[in-house]
Length: 212
Ligand code: NDP
Image (cartoon, rainbow, N blue to C red):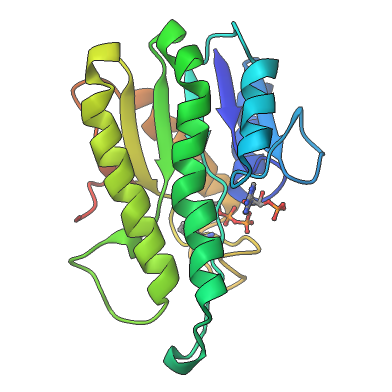
């Protein structure tokens, strides 16, 4: 299986890449710091074009849109800068769309799957307040995934959207509920289970449907 993972240089992305590699799969990791096979800032259209060229003709069985930022963590409501909105939506929403768009021929060639790492903070029904930008951007990523699942149905490409848990990474912090290993193990099982009948699902790392 050929797996492409954005943001594979640290955190959950790195743990997922390690697992697929250990299982003998071909992994194309992307990172904006140049440490992976493909250098990709997901907000950069020129780098998306370079990636598409580099992977031209290589079918992709699974694309994991994992890269993301949480810029307004702990931000008070008075302190929101417009740039923070723009940067967050560029990475968490547009970045997902551009990655899918760039690799669509590869995904079509394999009838591959797309996994979008969103968050429980995308939920409309569970809205405790705060983190306005992150919540809105992850809600948009969820919406994007749900709509992609419809459009890509005829191509045989299933799309799943996932909450990875509150994970002890740079983003999640030490207080997180679960280790990066537990999150990655759970997510890999979810991706394996994803199929045309479950396309459009919003699930937690441990296999529970999440409220939209
Ligand atoms: P980390 O902060 O540990 O890692 C984030 C990754 O995303 C890094 O590889 C980072 O690269 C990359 N990234 C950020 N912006 C860009 C960009 N513009 N272009 C390319 N890569 C980028 O986060 P986690 O591993 O914890 O999170 C992974 C995903 O899981 C994210 O989408 C996050 O929102 C989501 N998530 C995490 C939760 C948690 O508790 N940890 C909870 C819910 C969702 P670089 O090293 O260059 O910054």
